[in-house]
Length: 316
Ligand SMILES: Cc1cc2nc3c(=O)[nH]c(=O)nc-3n(C[C@H](O)[C@H](O)[C@H](O)COP(=O)(O)OP(=O)(O)OC[C@H]3O[C@@H](n4cnc5c(N)ncnc54)[C@H](O)[C@@H]3O)c2cc1C
Image (cartoon, rainbow, N blue to C red):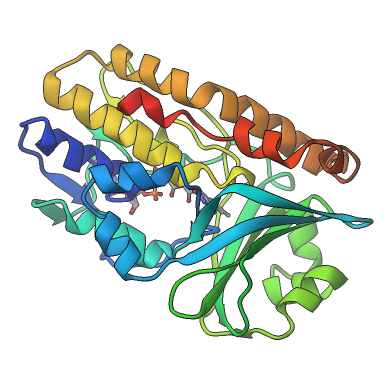
């Protein structure tokens, strides 16, 4: 198994549950921060239980989120979430998951045939100027039970509570816009009044982390089991990336352990991920074109939530 993010850890834990022995190679030292909105949708709970980390997550007191507020330049819209979700840092989540893997080696590894490859997003081949980058930092200050998403100028930024009294601020945008603010997220936030007002009572407690360029692609490999973002990077707007990573990681771990051909794993993942990938691609195009301001307020919130969720039942 290569990669110790949610997909790789899920694959390794599942492979052991299926009776195989595994070694997981992760190049970074954990725990580590990761650019992520740190939003966990409710469908993830049974998967965390199956992977043996649910008690650890609940003991760390994830922040409960019951509503989603979408802010557009001219209006806003609040949706009550069908089930409550969690804000929980990747610092804690990824360490809990990797902590369940018995044999972890801190080493960069080149994939070979038969490997589970969960190495995260691929490099983007989008030309300079049109590329997208992400940023995130933790803040301290008053928290709410709403995850707020601010859309402006082809960018969006999410603000939500996580554990330990912290709030995560995470966004992404095209480099043409980020360059106007010297690639300084604080400057970007200051330029957009609703976001600036939301962040004003909060105090940043870490340096900004950045990532990118982002590549929204799906791919497979006839001789390896790709999982997580290495298989399919879904637009972060959906808050479904970690859920998708666990589903595809569990599928890859099971197939690799049982000696199933990679094609069987990819067909399972296709059933789980096709719809959210298509819907989120449409939403991303509407954000980039500025149409989201007009179109998204018209879409019922429950549809947005349902259409962007992968089907976890494929790994039951
Ligand atoms: C701006 C932004 C906001 C997001 N917000 C959310 C959100 O709110 N909710 C959500 O569910 N998802 C969100 N996502 C998506 C989510 O972060 C990813 O889907 C998730 O991290 C995928 O997990 P993974 O295990 O596939 O990859 P990763 O988490 O990237 O893990 C891959 C691991 O592989 C290791 N690695 C890479 N190459 C090698 C190698 N050769 N050898 C050894 N180790 C290697 C890396 O060090 C890394 O630890 C967001 C993404 C972005 C960019």
